[in-house]
Figure 1 (tube, rainbow, N blue to C red):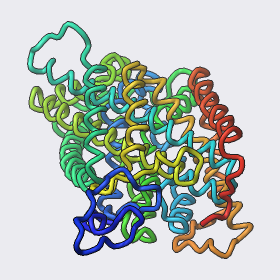
Figure 2: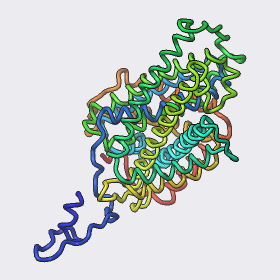
Figure 3: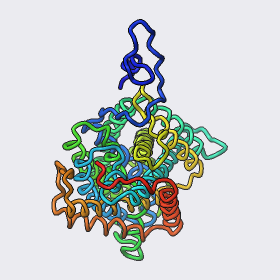
Figure 4: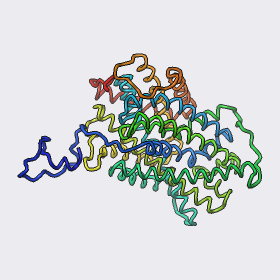
Length: 473
């Protein structure tokens, strides 16, 4: 119901008598009966997927990944892309069968039942909270680089304070409608892809000796062989969380049968190619050890090495846009996860209230934005990234299990318009790959992720054991 309609009805929902003034619009009275407007098309879906992924993989991780795995960090990113595709195809099938907000949570709760759904739903909310905080710290690092390029010396590292400030601003912006954030996202991603295509094309030709001096390749695999490569794949997998965030906002996407699978698979393929080329260019410019010493803004130094100050400034701008885009999309998706879980009575129903003026879940946005800002204030980049990956990888594994379960049971309502090719095999491999990658993460990250899931299950046992969600579609 739009705001105009709301002014024509009384508190019981009946039309207001014509001789009486219409009651004032009340923007927090939605009790979970409204629906989100479908305003995001294919371009918007691709923009959410690409925009979320490209920020971390290109502008935050190259230095950290090269320090750990050397030139083989490109293989780590490729492994991450394969795992993401193994999940994206089953996820696309489930999303076309159940095009609702909530993404993986919705599919698992309907396919496997309320208990797994509650653990994943709350885990998805908090996983996106960790991911958003990670992106915000990256955004703060690039914003701080602006001061460094201008020759302004600050008494403290501005990365964390600026990240917190951006977190507050983006949460408030999201309250005013997905049209605002989606339009902003589209513009940012288009500008970003243009800058990156030009930069990586030049860098590739330079690395191959067409413009400059051909670089001497390092040994591809690091000491220790594939183990550091797999550890790095686990670390950088956060770079691929964006494709699933498209499914998380499925309730906002137009023509979901066509646009959802295209947006998810397309965004993984596009971003995976960018990641591999980025590592090749970056390690060719400096070598892995030196690149690792530059930290989160290593790509600025790579650009400076190729084309001087103009290149460094261009990458600073691109890094700002990319990390801004990732944080923006993640905050939007985290709020939609809260909205979906609340609509299913696994959280208090007040969390799914809609602001009737803007059509956005303002309470859910607050429940996402608040903890995001707190976590961003810690500045723990690698821990935030890995905890986000742990929680998402568990969800991805169970998404694949849900597809297998639904195909075996074949309920009457399960009629996806897109079917994953070799569905049982792909879903089985997706489950195995997702859960195996967790084993290569830091014990602290695994511990925090496990604690979140245990707490989510305890909440389910306390609050929602009488809720039945399996097959409720």
